[in-house]
Image 1 (tube, one colour):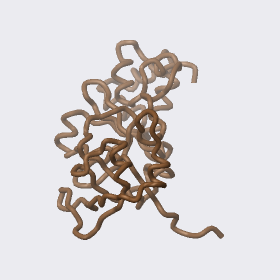
Image 2: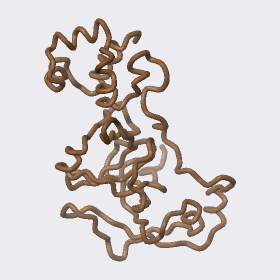
Image 3: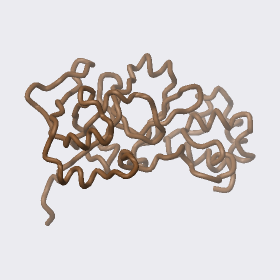
Length: 232
């Protein structure tokens, strides 16, 4: 891909958009889109299209730098300098019980009697308020293989501001979703999956978030999963 037109064409393929559908969405003619393929994306449209596809303007224009806003690679939640969660998890015997929740009737509801034990010192290291922490089950495969469907998730409901590349639980049209998030132009919210091949990026304006009931439930700070079968 040597030109911005080539990169635009590839982005349409990733999103399963035909050039004619894309032209209609952008209120331009198909000939305009064909011209962009051949001559490159106009400078006046770079910000708009980079925001639309949740990619970096520099990458779209020249192919230089990272494609997506950094850091979109999957990483473990940050640990304060000089500390490590590994010895904490291994040595700590004092645990806290985080209540399990589910989405029912478009609201977050606790499941009485269902809890998950988490080392207290690990919670303290990440500065997670106990009263704000809940557990839920990973609802889909979009974050596989990092978070397979059914993985246990611990969520800090006190963190709802978006830090690019961090993993969050969302309530969207009455269902639970889990994605990496980033912010685009004019406050648009971009949803990224770990399995990008089968789950293209999604973008929602402030208006779309409001009418679709798209809310950030909290930051995913811990997860655990069990293999479904023994090898062989």
